[in-house]
Length: 108
Image (tube, rainbow, N blue to C red; front, side, top):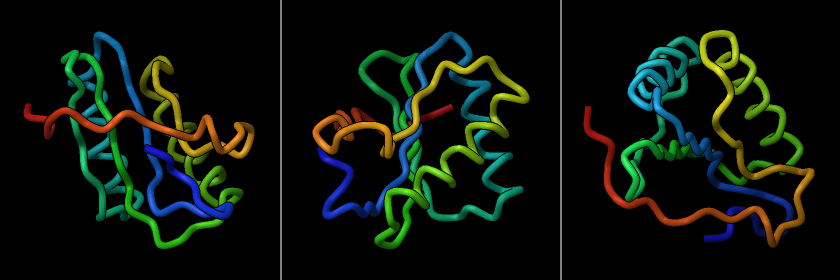
């Protein structure tokens, strides 16, 4: 699924794949509460160690999306080894700013 259209996006996505997926889930919940991010969804991939976090944004330019994702990623790095990727990214061509559709909603 493409994430960008005409240099804008409606979703910021964090994709985590690692053994500490439950810790990542709880860190996301706490961090988003701290940053007042209310509109997001957390899904699990076919592999239980893969988590996708979709943050709803309203027609955000790609450079602003990059800045917000960097802020979130930097905050996560203080507590957890980086095993996630952030999309969309201004450093990637639009053909690479894509994600696989989620498998199911994450359940603790």
